[in-house]
Image 1 (tube, helix red, strand yellow):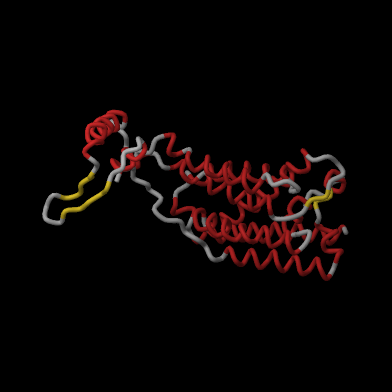
Image 2: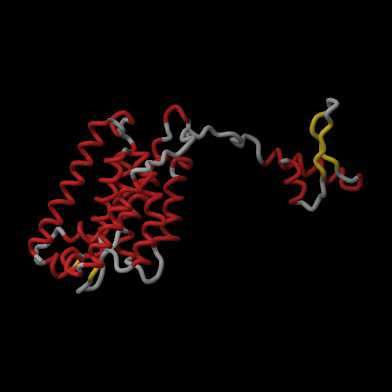
Length: 275
């Protein structure tokens, strides 16, 4: 098959045939193309000498944590609360004037709010998938906590980079944070896998490509997306070098889940108290 592609690239028609009697696989070309075909195949082998045809890929499968659906349901519930009580949205929205006046908790509470149903659906459509993959890779509680912190970092970037006054809300920074975390997975491919630096950076390059496609859409808070992605990438770099046993241990994930719940309780308690 490789030979046939090389010949086709030079305009030489070739037919792949199999002889079950023992001759094996063969390529058939016309007599007038025979000499050119042999020259092409010799050149093909010369140019590809030493090429690593088969590389071992240590990450053979991705683990999806279905608990990520629970976070999606929580975001949907918060959207219902803000639709029946507008004060809920006003209490938690990322108002730059209020944040600069000391209401720091808004960089966290704004993650749970959305402008409309289309905004929520857009974040959930890709967010649930990325949350589940990040939680499957880094642990249920640890992965979700890290993605949430990346989302808060995205809101901080929005605070710093956008013109003021500015109002921001939505989980898109957290979604980009999960993407950044997943982009760091291949950095641990070294050691016994023999992966080159180029191969280990492939995951980061793929993550940057996806971020460019989804995170830089016109009309969105690109500052929050960029901040969330960079924060997620940095958190992923730190987490990916921790032992798998530690990341997926029950104690680690219970502690991370407790911290996340405590952070939600404290920030929303302050938001509702000061509104």
